Image 1 (cartoon, rainbow, N blue to C red):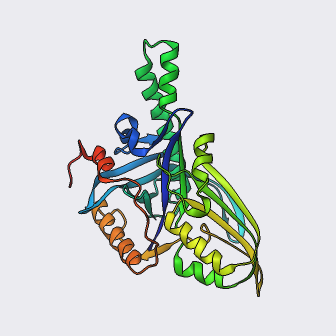
Image 2 (cartoon, rainbow, N blue to C red):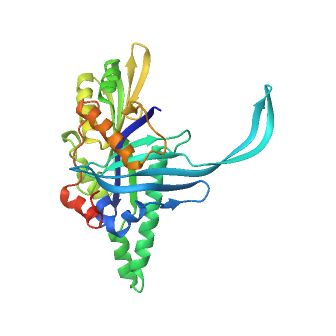
Image 3 (cartoon, rainbow, N blue to C red):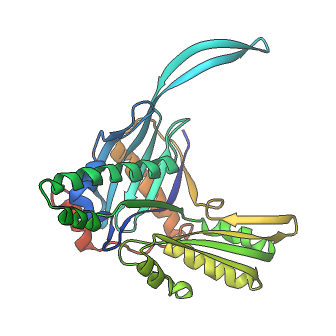
Length: 323
């Protein structure tokens, strides 16, 4: 069976009036609770994590792997029979899943839907944002007992709500092919996301960190019109792809008419052959990671900069053995 993997940047940040934190800054407090086997949200449909493992997939690659499951009931209200629509009242239990691999050093998400109806990356992003904020509230309540009003306000300020973003990583070869079709560019729109507590920005937006810092904002939009240097756009987009901290959309004209290009539209994806449904998660992860590394080494995926060093990663493995 042939399955498709997609790669993007998944980032979790906490920005408040007095705090700027990222995923690992709150790992022990409540993040690790979310990334645990069987953790769920909702009833029907219920979304939950299964087969969760936190380990080193290679000597220097710490990851969280698991399955994201949508446990639901499929209802059938009518069918086509003898070319006529016929009412039917049937229901079936269904639990399609997607495999996720979250590379902790770069916040790279590798995602593989396993079945028809598997939960999407957007659903996974939403699940994380809702559940992390739910656990944040539980944590705040637990440490706020018997505290004064001023102390409770301070605790809330030190634990701002989470915002989770997902930015597709564009496939370089396909992106170049599409950009080469453009004769004229009418508009470029870039949404730049705050990455971790220590922002890393390119020179073309070197003022953004000050703006985001001052306003305590998680993202900022740029719109550029009447662009004349198409070759410059290629370098510009290549930098965005490497930084993996911005979504973009390019509007322009080609020989065939109007053309829009975005990293949603040209996001990297690749296929894995001979995929076995319900295979052990560690075997699946090794297979996915091998394919990802192969495509990265060939230049299909841009190199992604490190966002967490070994010292930050260590907090995850203080009570987790390397397997």
